[in-house]
Length: 335
Image 1 (tube, rainbow, N blue to C red):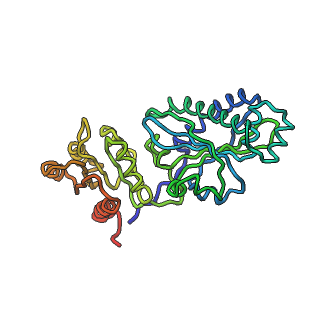
Image 2 (image 1 turned 90 degrees about the vertical axis):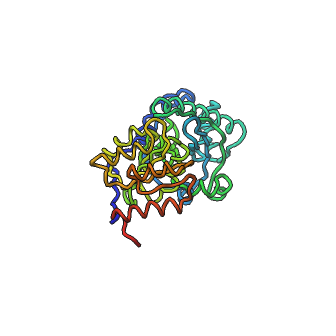
Image 3 (image 1 turned 90 degrees about the horizontal axis):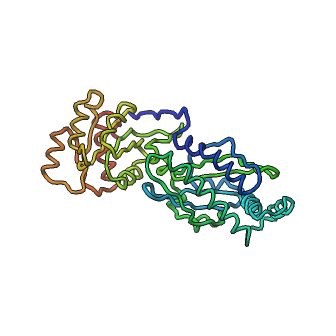
């Protein structure tokens, strides 16, 4: 029997954190444009960039921000061309009437382009300063490019994988005093967004086949496993074995995947702890290792593991082993 998804009843930590940057952005953008700047009514949407552009009726200026240090990926700021022209022209201190005329013509070039890029570089710095103390791991944002984006050139701006990857798009109403209202749009891959706070940001209508906890000290391996499983399973991750039982207290788990060689409390010891815990003694555990020995496999089975996986593994092998255990434990029905 498949477990129904738990419906999201409150904003995710990611949404709360991103929205908490708005006061700083509004204050600082007001200073650099000499106009009152407002961001209101934020809405977080779970979609793909492909679907976002299919429903778009305008062209955009896409601002790519590289995410570095502990996290790896990109964050996108998206502005309609008209809004980018308005902002760039404000940075050039042009008269309001000229700015409105230029925005109406849709001409985004020359000094206006450079001024808008300077604006987005400063917004990048604002986000960097705001997010750094709020996230559990180190982060650094760096502006890498600004590019025109629309339905026609999407395949050249993004790879096919990036276009079709699940992403989180936060849209807020953007008001610059004296000008037409626009939108402030921020996009990040769903996997990366969830990684910030080790949370699963769920859609009300989406159903998962089960909930899996992955314990591994390799952040790269955690990312790979979440990417392999995220479309079918609710995947919780931690690089700290001491927090694994705490996660168990707060979530219903159907399976645990543990790396055998975690510093400190190793995977075998953690497996034994799960087996001794009344809440988890029936949850199937799979131990994995990139350098297994016969002794490690024997220790894992003796500790109560139901199976063993050798890294690196393919998605097919991982899914097969997980489904086997979930079927054996009556979480899934054999099809």
